[in-house]
Image 1 (cartoon, rainbow, N blue to C red):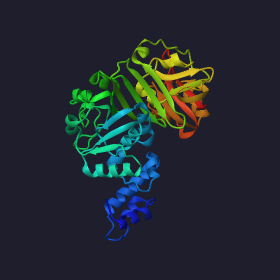
Image 2 (cartoon, rainbow, N blue to C red; image 1 turned 90 degrees about the vertical axis):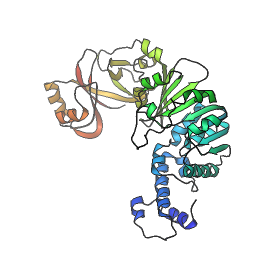
Image 3 (tube, rainbow, N blue to C red; image 1 turned 30 degrees about the vertical axis):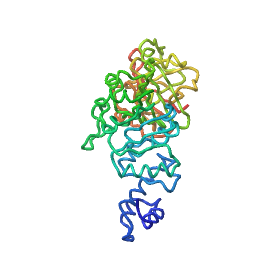
Image 4 (tube, one colour; image 1 turned 120 degrees about the vertical axis):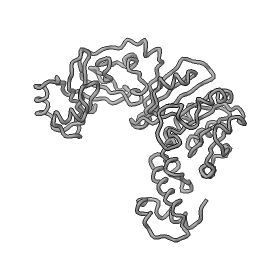
Length: 389
């Protein structure tokens, strides 16, 4: 793909600042655009793709493909959901998901319309010892008619239109899976897995994909990364799963029927402990069901915070020890301003934004304390002063 001079230049400047490298004098034989792409990609991979970063023979794609590809953590998680004889990744991209899916199947197919990207991925799969994946250079639409049925089909539609603008509706993504859904279902023996943007509305997407059997909201270290919509051949009640990957993996599953029928436990006030669900649960919407699975009470119908007198260690989210609860009125504001000079300010179901509340209280940002403006079950506005539990 390139010459030895370029490879040596990349190795020599692998950890240097990309902007500075771009200004360096260099041997004319060095393919500078390619070298900068490799240096930038490798630096991005250090955190996002540690299994790629650890191999010096990996080649990296343009920035847009690095941004759109799955991380090692999310790719491994998706691969853990599937298994079988054959799979087809119909929107291959940088091939991170293809790599991890290949380890779960006897044979796989990687489909990518960009010939240069496909060549790069084929090289990387060989470098990483993957020998059971065939490359097909074409679009999903071109591949489908000739595709042999596979156990699982995987599609990761691009969240950008032809002009590079971000889109937040499944029908605007590329490739358009909705337009080809009957043929996709015809080619999938066990099911289809779609990786979608976390910006998409789950309920709207369910209306577009009524055959969905599983929805998973995947976060990494508290940041929502992707939505997974799974359609299994085996019919089952729709299950939603909130997944927070990281140091302590957190999973919380519920059905829509459970959430709709749940009778939550309501709190009379803020107890000794305060709980904030992780972002995956907040996206999935299992607010009432949480009180059925954990010994916590919800502060109010629209306040997605919970409380208890005894610490619930296994709660899937952040846990705070409450120091004080102050009514949100002039006297309470004066009291708080005198007692707290610095805090991490947040609001949940509160009439002010976090910035507005911080300005009103004249509190500096940061420090060990957390200050949460929120609303209780009877409509009372309060300020909760807490610290990480």
